[in-house]
Amino acid sequence: MRREIAERGDSRLALLLAGVELYAVLGREFDLLEVMRSFAHDMHLVVEGTPTVRDLEQLFERDPPS
Image 1 (cartoon, rainbow, N blue to C red):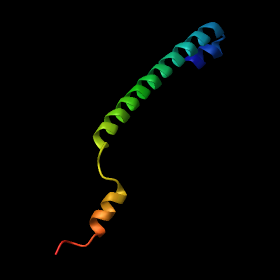
Image 2 (cartoon, one colour):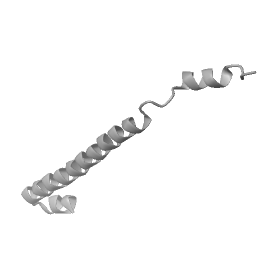
Image 3 (cartoon, rainbow, N blue to C red):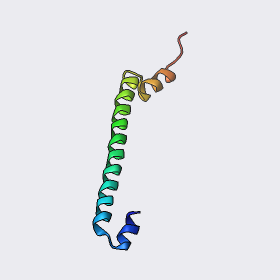
Image 4 (cartoon, rainbow, N blue to C red):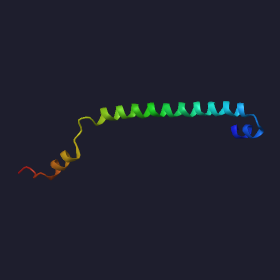
């Protein structure tokens, strides 16, 4: 719609619509960033204290008890 308005010659309205579009896009990006931060924090709490790959390899490579 913004391009159509710009083609018709109303550059001020086109600029205003571009600003609104930018505001909306940045708002969605900010919301997504907040969701990602929350997810990262939650996942850190979930995996904290779990064995590492090295710990698991040592567990499976050791000799079974006799």
